[in-house]
Image (cartoon, rainbow, N blue to C red):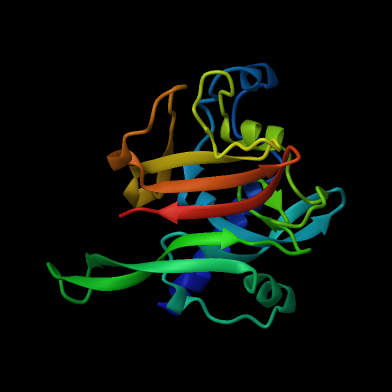
Amino acid sequence: MKKKVLLLAGILLLSAMCACGKTDGGTDEENAGGVNSDISYAVTDLAIYTTESTGDALMPSKFITMLGVDPATVEPSDDEKLERVKQYVETDTMEIAEGDINNPGQTKEQSVIRYFKYIGSREPVINTKSITTTGMMPEDENCSSVEDVIQAYGIDSENEEYIENEDVNGSYVIKLNFKDLNTSEGTLERIITPKGSEPEASEVRYTLRFTIQNDHVHGIDGYMYF
């Protein structure tokens, strides 16, 4: 099982490196207004990584955590930066029932990550949509902008309900919901919620939240519902 998770981490990293540095699908004109339906989503979007600098850009380096992964199967690393960053990541687990491949027709309980939150440090983290953050650190350097998030996820800022917890200082949270599109392929669909309405709770399988301060991302957390 540990070998499977290590292989998964490698696949996630390759996927992230291919995804970084671009917005999936659509022209600049299409992205300027309305939802960009050409952007695709996958379970790999529910992971975070350490970063490495390549010129002016930050790229994914080491897998940190991901919603739906059994934490007991992720082996410790000898990478000092990775282990240092892990100290600032909060996680929680839940028990789920899944098919037992050793006993067809039977199920077994498995512990999986249901929640993660990057509290923050001087070391930025990144996801597969190239969104970076140093969390609670006040400096905006190495933190993606609001516009980066809007473009990466194809948000219709005029007609879509995606902001919560807005305060008098201008800080708020961008909340994005997802559901499974094709479980066997690990693809997701982002749930588009019209302005002034609420998403159907039974549809939501995953949520990603980006804390916005000074028009930059100063926090990221994810939830899994079962």
